[in-house]
Image (tube, rainbow, N blue to C red):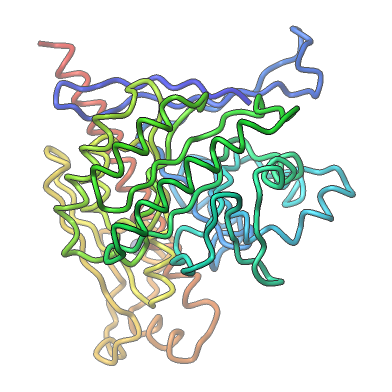
Length: 393
Ligand SMILES: [Zn+2]
Protein backbone atom coordinates (compact mmCIF):
# COMPACT_ATOMS: atom_id res chain seq x y z
CA UNK A 1 0.00 0.00 0.00
CA UNK A 2 1.32 3.45 -0.88
CA UNK A 3 0.19 6.65 0.74
CA UNK A 4 0.36 9.82 -1.31
CA UNK A 5 -0.31 13.00 0.59
CA UNK A 6 -1.06 16.24 -1.22
CA UNK A 7 -1.87 18.97 1.27
CA UNK A 8 -2.83 22.42 0.08
CA UNK A 9 -2.05 25.07 2.66
CA UNK A 10 -4.77 27.69 2.33
CA UNK A 11 -3.97 31.36 2.77
CA UNK A 12 -5.79 31.08 6.10
CA UNK A 13 -3.39 28.20 7.04
CA UNK A 14 -6.06 25.47 6.87
CA UNK A 15 -4.85 22.26 5.22
CA UNK A 16 -7.09 20.90 2.49
CA UNK A 17 -6.09 18.51 -0.31
CA UNK A 18 -6.18 14.72 -0.48
CA UNK A 19 -4.77 11.51 0.90
CA UNK A 20 -4.47 8.82 -1.75
CA UNK A 21 -4.10 5.13 -0.91
CA UNK A 22 -2.96 2.91 -3.77
CA UNK A 23 -2.35 -0.81 -3.82
CA UNK A 24 -1.65 -3.43 -6.44
CA UNK A 25 -4.66 -5.68 -6.87
CA UNK A 26 -2.39 -8.70 -7.05
CA UNK A 27 0.22 -10.15 -4.72
CA UNK A 28 2.70 -9.85 -7.59
CA UNK A 29 3.47 -6.18 -7.09
CA UNK A 30 6.39 -6.29 -9.53
CA UNK A 31 4.10 -6.91 -12.44
CA UNK A 32 3.68 -3.53 -14.12
CA UNK A 33 0.53 -4.78 -15.85
CA UNK A 34 -1.07 -5.49 -12.50
CA UNK A 35 -3.87 -2.93 -12.06
CA UNK A 36 -3.77 -0.64 -9.06
CA UNK A 37 -6.70 0.14 -6.83
CA UNK A 38 -6.76 3.76 -5.78
CA UNK A 39 -8.78 5.59 -3.18
CA UNK A 40 -8.75 9.35 -2.72
CA UNK A 41 -9.93 10.98 0.50
CA UNK A 42 -10.41 14.70 1.05
CA UNK A 43 -8.88 16.44 4.06
CA UNK A 44 -9.81 16.43 6.81
CA UNK A 45 -10.21 12.66 6.72
CA UNK A 46 -12.50 11.31 9.43
CA UNK A 47 -11.89 7.56 9.95
CA UNK A 48 -14.85 5.35 10.87
CA UNK A 49 -14.31 4.32 14.51
CA UNK A 50 -14.84 0.61 15.23
CA UNK A 51 -14.89 -1.55 18.32
CA UNK A 52 -14.35 -5.30 18.11
CA UNK A 53 -14.23 -4.96 14.33
CA UNK A 54 -17.61 -3.32 13.86
CA UNK A 55 -19.22 0.11 13.95
CA UNK A 56 -20.80 0.32 17.41
CA UNK A 57 -24.50 -0.69 17.23
CA UNK A 58 -24.57 -0.92 13.41
CA UNK A 59 -23.96 -3.43 10.66
CA UNK A 60 -21.61 -2.41 7.87
CA UNK A 61 -24.59 -2.49 5.50
CA UNK A 62 -26.30 0.31 7.43
CA UNK A 63 -23.43 2.63 6.56
CA UNK A 64 -25.16 3.17 3.20
CA UNK A 65 -27.25 5.68 5.20
CA UNK A 66 -24.13 7.59 6.33
CA UNK A 67 -22.42 10.13 4.02
CA UNK A 68 -18.95 8.92 5.02
CA UNK A 69 -17.72 8.18 1.46
CA UNK A 70 -16.21 4.77 2.34
CA UNK A 71 -13.53 6.24 4.59
CA UNK A 72 -11.03 3.82 6.16
CA UNK A 73 -12.03 2.08 9.38
CA UNK A 74 -10.07 2.69 12.59
CA UNK A 75 -9.43 -0.71 14.22
CA UNK A 76 -7.68 -1.13 17.58
CA UNK A 77 -5.29 -4.04 18.06
CA UNK A 78 -6.76 -5.06 21.43
CA UNK A 79 -10.23 -5.50 19.95
CA UNK A 80 -9.06 -7.95 17.25
CA UNK A 81 -6.01 -9.50 18.93
CA UNK A 82 -7.74 -12.83 19.65
CA UNK A 83 -8.48 -13.24 15.93
CA UNK A 84 -4.81 -13.41 15.01
CA UNK A 85 -4.47 -17.24 15.18
CA UNK A 86 -7.51 -17.59 12.86
CA UNK A 87 -6.15 -15.06 10.38
CA UNK A 88 -2.73 -16.73 10.40
CA UNK A 89 -4.13 -20.21 9.82
CA UNK A 90 -6.36 -19.01 6.95
CA UNK A 91 -3.78 -16.55 5.58
CA UNK A 92 -6.56 -13.96 5.37
CA UNK A 93 -6.38 -10.23 6.03
CA UNK A 94 -8.74 -8.69 8.57
CA UNK A 95 -10.70 -7.13 5.67
CA UNK A 96 -11.17 -10.56 4.05
CA UNK A 97 -12.18 -11.97 7.45
CA UNK A 98 -15.02 -9.42 7.70
CA UNK A 99 -16.49 -9.99 4.25
CA UNK A 100 -15.48 -10.63 0.65
CA UNK A 101 -17.46 -7.44 -0.11
CA UNK A 102 -15.62 -5.35 2.47
CA UNK A 103 -14.28 -2.37 0.57
CA UNK A 104 -12.75 -0.19 3.25
CA UNK A 105 -9.13 0.39 4.11
CA UNK A 106 -8.02 -0.33 7.66
CA UNK A 107 -5.99 1.93 9.94
CA UNK A 108 -4.62 -0.21 12.78
CA UNK A 109 -4.17 1.65 16.05
CA UNK A 110 -2.73 0.06 19.17
CA UNK A 111 -5.20 1.37 21.77
CA UNK A 112 -8.96 1.90 21.66
CA UNK A 113 -9.15 5.68 21.34
CA UNK A 114 -12.38 5.87 23.35
CA UNK A 115 -11.03 4.01 26.38
CA UNK A 116 -8.66 5.68 28.83
CA UNK A 117 -5.36 3.81 29.20
CA UNK A 118 -4.83 1.79 32.35
CA UNK A 119 -2.03 3.17 34.43
CA UNK A 120 1.20 1.64 35.64
CA UNK A 121 1.97 -0.98 32.99
CA UNK A 122 4.14 0.91 30.48
CA UNK A 123 7.67 0.00 29.52
CA UNK A 124 10.39 1.10 27.06
CA UNK A 125 10.34 -2.40 25.53
CA UNK A 126 6.62 -3.13 25.07
CA UNK A 127 3.17 -1.53 24.93
CA UNK A 128 0.41 -3.17 27.00
CA UNK A 129 -2.97 -3.76 25.37
CA UNK A 130 -6.12 -5.24 26.86
CA UNK A 131 -7.79 -8.09 25.01
CA UNK A 132 -10.64 -10.53 25.69
CA UNK A 133 -8.13 -12.74 27.45
CA UNK A 134 -6.56 -9.98 29.53
CA UNK A 135 -3.39 -7.91 29.24
CA UNK A 136 -0.92 -8.63 26.46
CA UNK A 137 2.47 -6.95 26.25
CA UNK A 138 3.19 -6.09 22.63
CA UNK A 139 6.90 -5.91 21.76
CA UNK A 140 8.05 -4.41 18.43
CA UNK A 141 8.59 -7.91 17.02
CA UNK A 142 4.97 -8.76 17.99
CA UNK A 143 3.70 -5.67 16.18
CA UNK A 144 5.37 -6.92 13.02
CA UNK A 145 3.60 -10.26 13.34
CA UNK A 146 0.26 -8.54 14.02
CA UNK A 147 0.67 -6.34 10.95
CA UNK A 148 1.61 -9.32 8.79
CA UNK A 149 -1.53 -11.16 9.96
CA UNK A 150 -4.09 -8.34 9.97
CA UNK A 151 -2.67 -6.68 6.83
CA UNK A 152 -3.92 -3.18 7.67
CA UNK A 153 -3.53 -0.46 5.05
CA UNK A 154 -1.72 1.79 7.51
CA UNK A 155 -0.71 1.61 11.17
CA UNK A 156 1.56 3.23 13.74
CA UNK A 157 4.53 2.41 15.95
CA UNK A 158 4.19 1.27 19.56
CA UNK A 159 4.01 4.05 22.15
CA UNK A 160 3.45 4.97 25.77
CA UNK A 161 0.59 7.49 25.71
CA UNK A 162 -0.56 7.15 29.29
CA UNK A 163 -0.50 10.87 30.11
CA UNK A 164 -3.73 12.12 31.69
CA UNK A 165 -3.79 15.92 31.94
CA UNK A 166 -3.20 15.87 35.69
CA UNK A 167 -0.22 13.47 35.58
CA UNK A 168 3.22 14.49 36.84
CA UNK A 169 6.02 15.88 34.67
CA UNK A 170 7.98 12.76 35.58
CA UNK A 171 5.27 10.57 33.99
CA UNK A 172 5.29 12.76 30.85
CA UNK A 173 9.09 12.50 30.64
CA UNK A 174 8.83 8.74 30.97
CA UNK A 175 6.14 8.59 28.28
CA UNK A 176 8.38 10.45 25.80
CA UNK A 177 11.44 8.38 26.73
CA UNK A 178 9.55 5.08 26.47
CA UNK A 179 8.04 6.00 23.10
CA UNK A 180 11.40 7.05 21.63
CA UNK A 181 12.96 3.83 22.90
CA UNK A 182 10.12 1.76 21.41
CA UNK A 183 10.64 3.47 18.04
CA UNK A 184 14.40 2.91 18.16
CA UNK A 185 13.86 -0.73 19.14
CA UNK A 186 11.38 -1.15 16.27
CA UNK A 187 13.68 0.18 13.59
CA UNK A 188 16.59 -1.65 15.18
CA UNK A 189 15.07 -5.09 14.70
CA UNK A 190 17.31 -7.09 12.46
CA UNK A 191 15.75 -8.37 9.25
CA UNK A 192 12.45 -6.64 9.89
CA UNK A 193 10.86 -5.38 6.79
CA UNK A 194 9.78 -1.89 7.79
CA UNK A 195 8.91 -1.43 4.16
CA UNK A 196 5.46 -2.60 5.27
CA UNK A 197 4.06 0.84 4.73
CA UNK A 198 2.62 3.34 5.39
CA UNK A 199 3.64 3.61 9.02
CA UNK A 200 3.02 6.56 11.32
CA UNK A 201 5.37 7.79 14.04
CA UNK A 202 3.92 8.74 17.43
CA UNK A 203 4.31 12.14 19.12
CA UNK A 204 3.97 12.04 22.91
CA UNK A 205 4.47 14.64 25.63
CA UNK A 206 1.00 14.98 27.17
CA UNK A 207 -0.07 18.61 27.59
CA UNK A 208 3.51 19.86 27.95
CA UNK A 209 4.74 21.65 24.82
CA UNK A 210 8.44 21.36 25.69
CA UNK A 211 8.14 17.58 26.03
CA UNK A 212 6.16 17.51 22.77
CA UNK A 213 9.00 19.33 20.98
CA UNK A 214 11.50 16.78 22.32
CA UNK A 215 9.30 13.97 21.02
CA UNK A 216 8.90 15.70 17.64
CA UNK A 217 12.65 16.18 17.16
CA UNK A 218 13.34 12.48 17.78
CA UNK A 219 10.39 11.23 15.73
CA UNK A 220 11.11 13.49 12.75
CA UNK A 221 14.37 11.61 12.17
CA UNK A 222 12.52 8.30 11.66
CA UNK A 223 11.53 6.99 8.21
CA UNK A 224 7.79 7.35 8.86
CA UNK A 225 5.00 8.39 6.50
CA UNK A 226 2.93 10.45 8.93
CA UNK A 227 2.48 11.34 12.59
CA UNK A 228 -0.03 10.65 15.33
CA UNK A 229 -0.46 13.15 18.13
CA UNK A 230 -0.98 10.65 20.96
CA UNK A 231 -1.22 10.94 24.73
CA UNK A 232 -4.44 13.03 24.89
CA UNK A 233 -6.93 10.90 26.77
CA UNK A 234 -10.59 10.75 25.83
CA UNK A 235 -11.78 12.27 29.14
CA UNK A 236 -9.46 15.24 28.63
CA UNK A 237 -10.57 15.70 25.00
CA UNK A 238 -14.21 15.68 26.14
CA UNK A 239 -13.63 18.27 28.87
CA UNK A 240 -14.77 21.63 27.45
CA UNK A 241 -12.56 23.54 29.87
CA UNK A 242 -9.50 22.16 28.00
CA UNK A 243 -10.66 23.53 24.61
CA UNK A 244 -8.45 26.62 24.34
CA UNK A 245 -5.38 24.84 25.72
CA UNK A 246 -5.91 21.97 23.26
CA UNK A 247 -6.04 24.37 20.30
CA UNK A 248 -2.81 26.10 21.37
CA UNK A 249 -1.06 22.78 22.02
CA UNK A 250 -2.06 21.29 18.64
CA UNK A 251 -1.11 24.48 16.83
CA UNK A 252 2.37 24.43 18.40
CA UNK A 253 2.85 20.72 17.70
CA UNK A 254 1.73 20.93 14.07
CA UNK A 255 3.81 24.01 13.32
CA UNK A 256 6.88 21.93 14.24
CA UNK A 257 5.98 18.91 12.10
CA UNK A 258 6.87 18.59 8.39
CA UNK A 259 4.17 20.06 6.14
CA UNK A 260 4.39 17.22 3.65
CA UNK A 261 3.25 14.37 5.94
CA UNK A 262 -0.23 13.80 7.41
CA UNK A 263 -0.92 14.35 11.10
CA UNK A 264 -3.60 12.40 12.96
CA UNK A 265 -5.32 12.96 16.29
CA UNK A 266 -7.64 10.20 17.45
CA UNK A 267 -10.28 10.37 20.16
CA UNK A 268 -13.75 11.81 20.78
CA UNK A 269 -13.93 15.38 19.47
CA UNK A 270 -17.10 17.47 19.50
CA UNK A 271 -17.60 19.53 16.31
CA UNK A 272 -16.19 22.71 17.89
CA UNK A 273 -13.01 20.78 18.85
CA UNK A 274 -12.82 19.33 15.31
CA UNK A 275 -12.70 22.88 13.95
CA UNK A 276 -10.07 23.79 16.58
CA UNK A 277 -7.72 20.90 15.73
CA UNK A 278 -8.03 20.95 11.95
CA UNK A 279 -7.58 24.72 11.84
CA UNK A 280 -4.42 24.08 13.90
CA UNK A 281 -2.95 21.59 11.41
CA UNK A 282 -4.50 18.14 12.02
CA UNK A 283 -5.45 16.17 8.87
CA UNK A 284 -6.96 12.91 10.19
CA UNK A 285 -9.48 12.38 13.00
CA UNK A 286 -12.07 9.67 13.72
CA UNK A 287 -15.78 9.29 14.48
CA UNK A 288 -15.48 7.95 18.05
CA UNK A 289 -17.41 10.99 19.37
CA UNK A 290 -20.58 9.51 17.83
CA UNK A 291 -20.09 6.19 19.63
CA UNK A 292 -19.42 8.08 22.86
CA UNK A 293 -22.69 10.02 22.51
CA UNK A 294 -24.75 6.99 21.49
CA UNK A 295 -23.38 4.98 24.41
CA UNK A 296 -24.65 7.83 26.60
CA UNK A 297 -28.14 7.77 24.94
CA UNK A 298 -27.49 11.19 23.43
CA UNK A 299 -28.16 12.69 19.98
CA UNK A 300 -25.99 15.34 18.35
CA UNK A 301 -27.29 18.52 16.73
CA UNK A 302 -24.95 20.77 14.75
CA UNK A 303 -25.75 24.29 13.61
CA UNK A 304 -23.36 25.15 10.78
CA UNK A 305 -22.80 28.51 9.15
CA UNK A 306 -21.80 27.54 5.58
CA UNK A 307 -20.22 30.96 4.94
CA UNK A 308 -17.95 30.64 7.95
CA UNK A 309 -17.41 27.09 9.14
CA UNK A 310 -15.64 28.30 12.30
CA UNK A 311 -18.97 29.74 13.44
CA UNK A 312 -20.45 26.46 14.61
CA UNK A 313 -22.58 25.39 17.55
CA UNK A 314 -23.36 21.86 18.64
CA UNK A 315 -26.11 20.80 21.04
CA UNK A 316 -27.05 17.52 22.65
CA UNK A 317 -30.37 15.81 23.41
CA UNK A 318 -30.32 13.06 26.00
CA UNK A 319 -33.01 10.73 24.69
CA UNK A 320 -33.48 8.83 27.92
CA UNK A 321 -34.60 12.01 29.75
CA UNK A 322 -38.09 11.75 31.25
CA UNK A 323 -39.19 15.04 29.74
CA UNK A 324 -39.07 13.48 26.22
CA UNK A 325 -41.55 10.65 26.87
CA UNK A 326 -44.41 12.67 25.37
CA UNK A 327 -42.31 14.54 22.77
CA UNK A 328 -43.64 13.54 19.35
CA UNK A 329 -41.08 15.55 17.34
CA UNK A 330 -38.21 13.83 15.52
CA UNK A 331 -34.68 14.49 16.84
CA UNK A 332 -34.20 17.27 14.29
CA UNK A 333 -36.79 18.13 11.63
CA UNK A 334 -34.02 19.61 9.41
CA UNK A 335 -31.96 16.40 9.52
CA UNK A 336 -31.94 14.05 6.50
CA UNK A 337 -30.77 10.94 8.33
CA UNK A 338 -32.69 7.65 8.28
CA UNK A 339 -33.98 8.09 11.84
CA UNK A 340 -35.33 11.61 11.31
CA UNK A 341 -36.69 11.16 7.75
CA UNK A 342 -38.55 7.99 8.76
CA UNK A 343 -40.25 10.01 11.48
CA UNK A 344 -39.06 8.17 14.58
CA UNK A 345 -40.18 10.35 17.47
CA UNK A 346 -38.16 11.38 20.48
CA UNK A 347 -40.88 9.73 22.59
CA UNK A 348 -40.37 6.38 20.80
CA UNK A 349 -36.57 6.65 21.10
CA UNK A 350 -37.06 7.45 24.79
CA UNK A 351 -39.19 4.29 25.12
CA UNK A 352 -36.54 2.19 23.31
CA UNK A 353 -33.80 3.47 25.60
CA UNK A 354 -35.89 2.89 28.74
CA UNK A 355 -36.72 -0.68 27.67
CA UNK A 356 -33.10 -1.33 26.58
CA UNK A 357 -34.25 -2.33 23.09
CA UNK A 358 -31.32 -2.75 20.67
CA UNK A 359 -33.12 -0.63 18.06
CA UNK A 360 -32.64 2.47 20.26
CA UNK A 361 -28.85 2.85 19.93
CA UNK A 362 -29.05 1.75 16.27
CA UNK A 363 -31.39 4.65 15.42
CA UNK A 364 -29.42 7.12 17.54
CA UNK A 365 -26.05 6.13 16.08
CA UNK A 366 -27.43 6.36 12.54
CA UNK A 367 -28.44 9.94 13.33
CA UNK A 368 -25.18 10.82 15.10
CA UNK A 369 -22.92 9.45 12.36
CA UNK A 370 -25.03 11.12 9.67
CA UNK A 371 -24.76 14.50 11.43
CA UNK A 372 -21.00 14.11 12.09
CA UNK A 373 -20.10 13.10 8.53
CA UNK A 374 -22.43 15.71 7.08
CA UNK A 375 -20.48 18.24 9.15
CA UNK A 376 -17.14 16.87 7.83
CA UNK A 377 -18.47 17.09 4.27
CA UNK A 378 -19.49 20.71 4.89
CA UNK A 379 -15.86 21.39 5.86
CA UNK A 380 -14.76 19.87 2.52
CA UNK A 381 -17.21 22.15 0.69
CA UNK A 382 -15.96 25.13 2.68
CA UNK A 383 -12.36 24.28 1.70
CA UNK A 384 -13.40 24.08 -1.95
CA UNK A 385 -14.97 27.53 -1.76
CA UNK A 386 -11.82 28.89 -0.04
CA UNK A 387 -9.66 27.39 -2.78
CA UNK A 388 -11.79 28.98 -5.47
CA UNK A 389 -11.68 32.38 -3.81
CA UNK A 390 -7.87 32.05 -3.25
CA UNK A 391 -7.39 31.26 -6.95
CA UNK A 392 -9.42 34.29 -7.97
CA UNK A 393 -7.11 36.67 -6.03
ZN1 LIG B 1 -31.33 12.75 12.15
